[in-house]
Image (cartoon, rainbow, N blue to C red; front, side, top):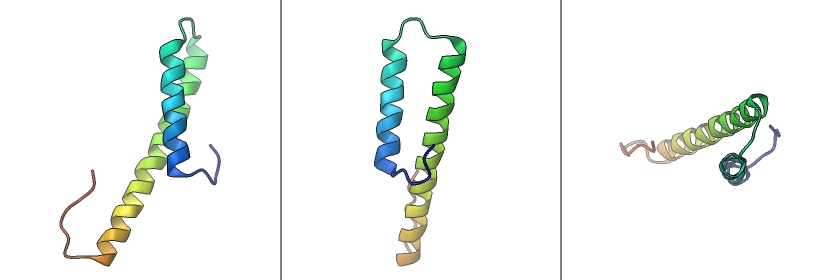
Length: 69
């Protein structure tokens, strides 16, 4: 995964992977595993970005008890 990818780019790539998996009839196990691993890493990155945003918002308004996710 690229080091300087944005949240939006990561989500777009996950959507592309899902589309590829849905459209491909004959995908080898190793190719499927590779795409699934890429999607997993991208989703971890996205979760991390959302947590960082939540923490930043909590720092701005510590009395806010509403949590993202």
